[in-house]
Length: 77
View 1 (cartoon, rainbow, N blue to C red):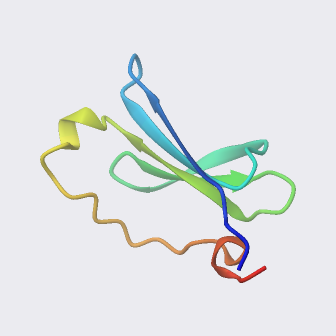
View 2: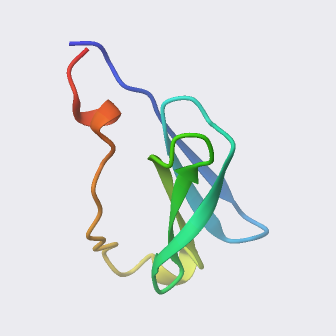
View 3: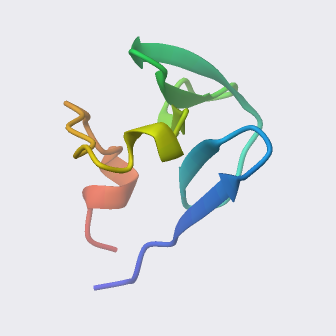
């Protein structure tokens, strides 16, 4: 099975965490919860990542998101 790349990026000034699946692509955010967002690929409409705003304020809580990973991440290559 081919490994899938997952990139985590934390922006300390903005206090947000971004999670990308595969290569970082041009996209936009769609809110899915209280300061939780999906990153959507502009060209394909596929979910290519997630973002959590006010991340450090949530550090004592579990991030319990009801999310669906993109098929490209779940599929074997």
